Image (tube, rainbow, N blue to C red):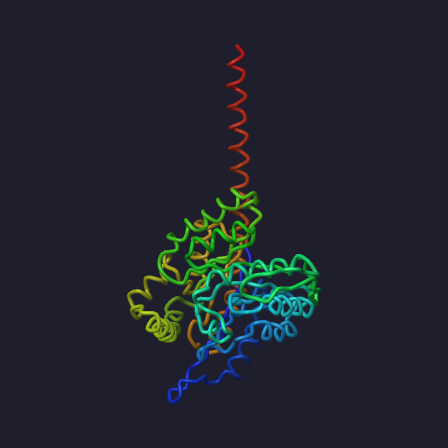
Length: 373
């Protein structure tokens, strides 16, 4: 299993103006976090795109390019690129450039966007929310498949036999589709044969299993091999030497940030009871000491059989030293155990599957022998 981190580069807000406070320092800290994640052996780091005062990154590719110069192994992805309000040509060029700079470590995680500020900012109509994503995803797929492209659609000027450069080292450039809880988005990813990143940020993870089943079933129905399509589970959490320290660090920033977003959307504020329920084994948050987080990742692996796990450590502004310690714990104490255990469980399941198939074949042969007597 691949294990990594994603961040929205959250910042505090100036109480007098409501504007950003300390975006420059947050970006410096973010690069240090990515550099440390690389050093402790994590597989991937994702950076989100937002156009709000409470987040410091509006252009993930720029930040990831800076990180590419400070890292050697870790893969670098958007988390997500809001493709609906962006130009797929520029998205492809930016990440192809990142791929070249990083020596083939770039990925794109494309989504419709859970926030909508980018749509009016770039002149898009929210009434076209899903149509924009579908059309632009089609163009992005065409761009990564061929150097010279002819294409036309409803929401972007046509392209007539134009070559698009630079070309990435990876062929094709990895592209994931990020989904929340919408079956339509799951079906689209499966139909296109693209890996799916599923965000579970609240409630019981069990209720998302039908979406994973739908993804694999749809993929098989349209002719893709479900076993060849990767699934990532992305969720909130934090790590500390013990569970209570983790909860004490996270509760204030998490409830402030989720409460403010909730007020914007008409959600009730998170309660302490809800917070504690979410950090339990069957809740959505990966919050605790090393063993609690190991147990929870493995619990969800039994549900989803996913190939990648990404954790958002900083839902609200967190102390930088605590974040760096959390990354160390994730890379040195959690990831090796999870990778080893998942591999053992996969091996045991493959062995059992082979035994079951052999037994089934033997039963079939016995039936044939009896029928000939």
